[in-house]
Image 1 (cartoon, helix red, strand yellow):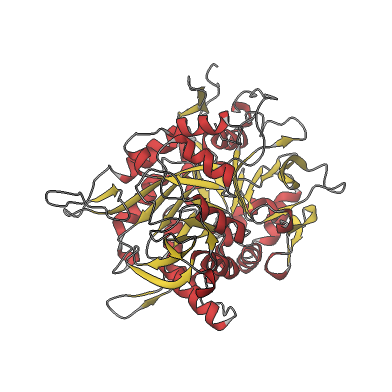
Image 2: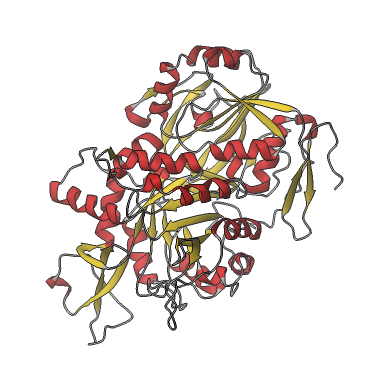
Length: 560
């Protein structure tokens, strides 16, 4: 394919291996960004800059009407967004801009706010540009909610905005959706199926919006943004294939355990059953590379998401951990798929006695480039409090963050170990009959939750913890397994099955992957939505492309 012509345009080239690469020649182009201050908009900014455009921020209501091209990346909860827009006096000028049909691209919540209203947050009025209400996905359909991951677009009509998509998937993360109807069919540009069809893109004249995140959809998403920013330079139409396996893809996630080594440098490491030091010699922290470079490599190799786990956990004060925040900022400039970060997401008191909430800590992550935050030990403690009280009180880290940023932004990381029992009636925890008997022939087991990197066990089972944090507002479970960590013999399918059957939110299987078939196995035998690995990818023992080829060859929906 020849490069696209036009002054200041991005030049798009197909890669020889079937993945598209994007090279940019900067030009004197500007887009106005409506950032109302919630969530990770850094990724949108980085995508715009990568495409050769400068950004003018909306600082006052008049800036909306003076915009030549307006981009609105809505992040967080519907009610919170409308409250902020009203408080800043931006609702009326935004409605006027849209009613005039001027160039506009809304992203995720930026699409939902165009509708009459939403049932989120107890019911909220929207901008009223498109007929219809936004409703929650129906969990009775048996699908995990939030809808998280890479899914297809069924395009209702040809368009410049989506012409380069073809069979490529784009990244969604949301619990609420707009439904197509006769009243809004003239707006609907594409739908996506998740149990039932929902509106995934709208367009009328120069006003467009998408439910997915183009800034997190790899090169496919960057091409969509380019088509909005400069329609004349939009990438050429992409072919489609009837042979593709459609639907929400099973995700392959690359995880980077990050900590300081003995010299004080941030490195990616990997332990065996949570021990990250070398077995012999000076027992130094195992160094497998630099975080930003590895994250960029995984993006290039096709990882569906990248997760950073700061395993020293900000033991002093997370907002002072500038190197880790800088890692996020730099990674978000090079990685255009979702970034999750965990470690120290809880309330803190600094050396001067000032208290910071978990929400403030999470906000620092989001501002630095994270799309989701992962809560570990603190989730165990708040779940114990919730189960003891029998009710929510709105004070926990999970509740606070999900209220402001949406449940899809909150991941809970569980670190359990297997406990065998001869008689399940002797324990209060959810047990299963196991195919792997214990050392004394025990036929049953449960999984004990731990905190502090597996160093301290609690009287709480993994199934009960998962159910509790779902009730508190978590949107996803990262399910580790201390017994299988670093062993390379496969995921603990019994554990993953037990937890994924017990909740309605997505579950990420972690710990134990050693070869491509382990990923296929966990998807075929459990309800896991994603699977995560670290060491085998770091050491290049298994390639992400090998994993995905094995999945696709076994007819699993896969983003290739």
